[in-house]
Image 1 (cartoon, one colour):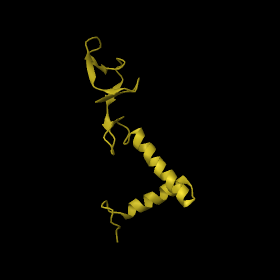
Image 2 (spheres, helix red, strand yellow; image 1 turned 180 degrees about the vertical axis):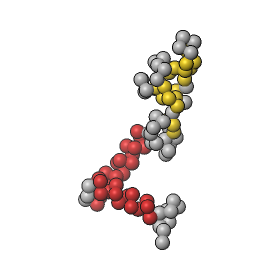
Image 3 (cartoon, rainbow, N blue to C red; image 1 turned 30 degrees about the vertical axis):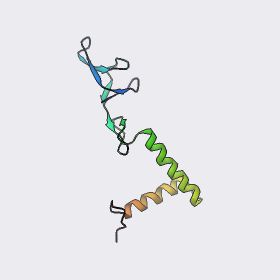
Image 4 (tube, helix red, strand yellow; image 1 turned 90 degrees about the horizontal axis):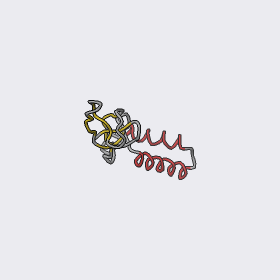
Length: 96
C-alpha cells in the first residue's frame, strides 16, 4: 500500500515504463511513499502518522466530553488522561 503526496490516494503503486519508477494509480505521480497503518483501526495512513483522521476525531471528542463533564479546559482534560495512563501498567491495573 502506498500514499500519494500529490493527490492523497492510498493504493498500490504501478510501474511506469515511461519513467522507470513506481507511480500513483490515481494520478500517475512519482511522489509516493509506503503507507503505514492506523495504530487503532488498521486503516492506511501516511508513513509519518500514527492514527487515521477518524480515530483522531473520536479521541478528540472524548477529550472534549471529559472537559465538559469536569467543567475544565481540553488541555487540562488531556493532561489528566495522560496522568492516568502513566499510572497504569498497560493492563488497566494501577501501579502501586
